[in-house]
Image 1: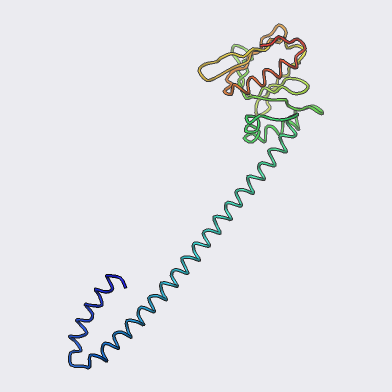
Image 2 (image 1 turned 90 degrees about the horizontal axis):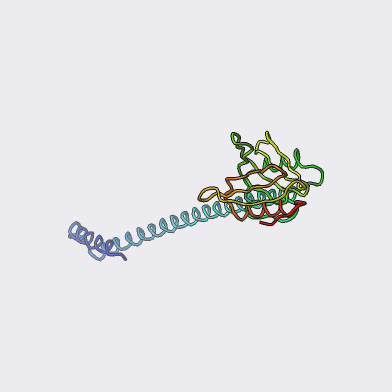
Length: 221
């Protein structure tokens, strides 16, 4: 019995004794004890019912959380399968984490790339998002994509595309373009192609090396 209830009972005993001072105290005490026992039993039943309801509510909430976790996992698994299926259509073999992330974020572009741009049996070897300095007055953002047939540069909306032949590539060099940015300079015959605003150096080197290794005239960086 809690301290609070003990105090309450003692106060009740004083009032009962005063109010029933002219009655048989043994009978009164029996009635008081019976009343208290019944009241405690009802309190216990109410508490048990409340505990049961709380347990049921917790179980329902747990089931909802588990269902939500399952739903998210199923969506993630579906998303993963879709990305891997698209990767298999875009990439010739293997892919970097950078490429996985880009395809995950830009599925519409890469799907259109395979359907509207790639030739028969053409696959990407790598790619990187960057800015193409087409001229001193014209800079275009898009993807630089060496494939198993050629090198492409395309904007995400496919409104601009430039194509380059590996046979014409003479040299590839990378350079710093600010504190965090990097870029590639490609000697393309008598022209010098410049692609900058690349923020992933490892991916930039991957793209640059692939272009260089597929060029007819190789001058290593």
